[in-house]
Length: 513
Image (cartoon, rainbow, N blue to C red):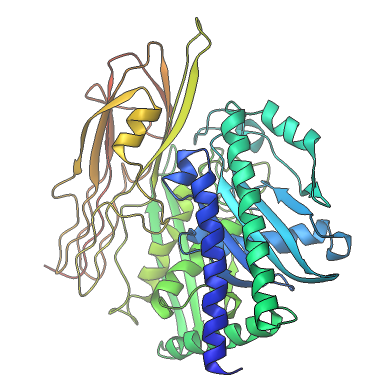
């Protein structure tokens, strides 16, 4: 394909997904999507291979989307799809790894030919069950689990399925609003893609996709061949729930691809920090994206170079019905194991462990006298790890790409008032370059009754490691009225006027000071 034509087509496809993403973000009802960007819009060819994604898409959803679509098509084959059909699921072992994320996919037809698929994935503000937390023991406690189904058939919504969803969540209006926003994003992507095909007189996007895949694969392989072939090992330790968890990644580099094997990692646990395979795959290939081809949009030409082996029954690939609600507390740390493994052969590109994972705080209150209630989710980021040529950025959303929720928005939607939100001075690990600083956030409850707060945190006991002689970052903490919370992965209650302080961990340093 003519390189100029390819560049035009490629950028047009990215623009389509960006417009779909903008539609989802602007029409969503929840701050999870609207403020924190916890969503993705992706475009795949007729063979369910990833072609393009919106610029705000998070790595976890980009990496899981093709795996999810292929699993969905195993249950509802292409032959049973027609214009106006929309598939959904939130099954953790098919979708993104936990129940709050709704994966939605639609076929795109040009006439009677299926030419592509579009997907919209978003974190819903509630999915029923227990309050989103890390201390559930089974997936059945964590909410409503939707099998792969047609939520729309021939353009007609399955109102019974939607009624079941709305009946089982605490925020039906908000959940329905985000659902409709996802549907709208799919329609935007479909409409714009068909306009592109008509404008350029294309029969489909498979030929364009194949050219994109070849270009991306060649670019990634050029960088991969700079790494000496061999086997390298990296490890990460994290707090776990009631005892530490160890992640071991054995990275085998060949000049035609990479295998990452997590054999030797801790076994799955009885609490909700377990990973599923799809999410582990996504956050395993993401650090390689940073290392090998950061300037090229994600697509199948890059992802097909990687094989991820995650033994069943381990913390990175738990068997159902394991609790998986807080799976990101493990998934966001996989990047550190990959970077450590490759540090001896790529010291100029790797980074030290970051003050990950993303900290999630869910606030919920119910007034038993009036029936008034609210629920909202806040996200906060720790400091990134340092690299050979720079200090780690402070309070940055790596690797999740999730934005911090602005204080003004949080105080408007939740009965809390912030007393502090500042960088945690000195929390980054020392070295030739320092790790990024975490942040300190504190707020008081203004709710008249008991405010239930789910804490999804990590690195309060085990710090982010430094790299190649750098010092570890400082651990975080959670204080309620000045006293440490016994388990910072639990649900705590705040009375009116109580003060909760969150201190997020700093990133590791790089090289000896």
